[in-house]
Length: 275
Image 1 (spheres, rainbow, N blue to C red):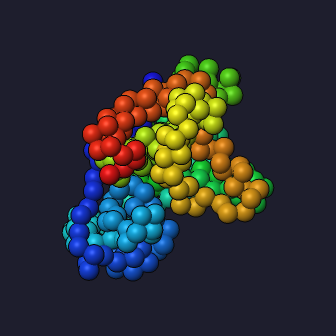
Image 2: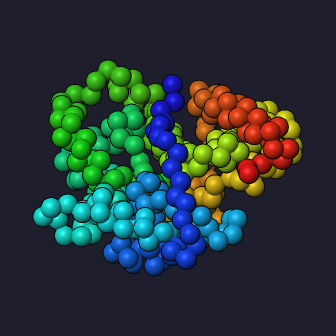
């Protein structure tokens, strides 16, 4: 069964005169651009409505105040507590140090699905460098001390012998779950699920071309940090699509369910697409 974060959709409704752009919001929270983007990705900071459909997200000052209040901790200087939650480490060597193990053990734990990446970057050699939340690595070390020493369990040995790598699939599950958290609109939720299906499977799952046009228009943008250089972008694009039969089947089934609700909305409103 595909693992994906299950969370309730969250929305923020505010008046336009109390909304600010991402650069100002990041500054008011004392975060860098990348730290703020990660906070938004994780749902720590919730976006308000854009000025126009498809425009850049804006943020309510009331939401920024909520984040400051929620993330402040006794004895911790603001915004260090928030920065700790969004801090990432990239690559096996750095992540292994954060976990307190050697790079080979870390790689085995990650490839076998014990640790879930939160993002990626493509290096100059066009290799994928997975990013992990430092806080999650520390939590894993405290929760699973037996995994940090001793021989690999049988299940892991089987996966490694098969040269399995669950990191892309685990990342996609997390990515989709976080995107679904941001909207309750059935067409937008269907578009999130459709966005990770290979083209052939999407055409089979959604034979109506007009519906595919709607889903494509509502498809989420690539995640923060997705490369712009064509050669690197081509490598990264492969990470955005489900690539094993079980995973593809899971997303197709989920898309079928989402489209049932979306079509029901269209039948009640007389319009195809979000309302």
